[in-house]
Image (cartoon, rainbow, N blue to C red; front, side, top):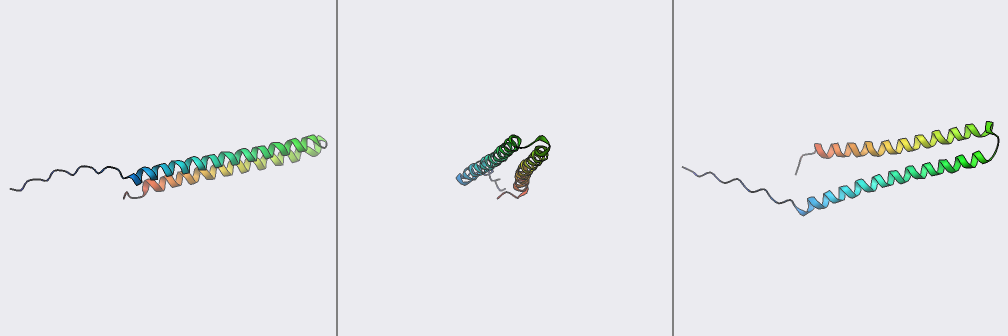
Amino acid sequence: MTALAAPAAPAAPAASDDSASRVEKVRAWAGLIAVVAGDAAIAIAATVGIIHFAASGTSSQVLPQIVAILSSAFTAIGTMTTAYFGIKAMANTAKNLSPSK
């Protein structure tokens, strides 16, 4: 009769797995910081534009310009933020679907 072999002990995680995990975390934080900084820059530019146009001219001339600035800023912020989170979600999905090595 042959003896059954004992199950192999699980291998310790490689140092490269820990390094890859840290790189992913840094990438995620760096991307988020870049998006937040970009959103803040757009908001500041819109605020400066509104202040500039509100200080000059009559209200009938200023209102369309302020509306244009606000709608453009809202669109830019929404588009950039949505793109970041969409790309991040797809990257996470692709990473989870890929076979483990």
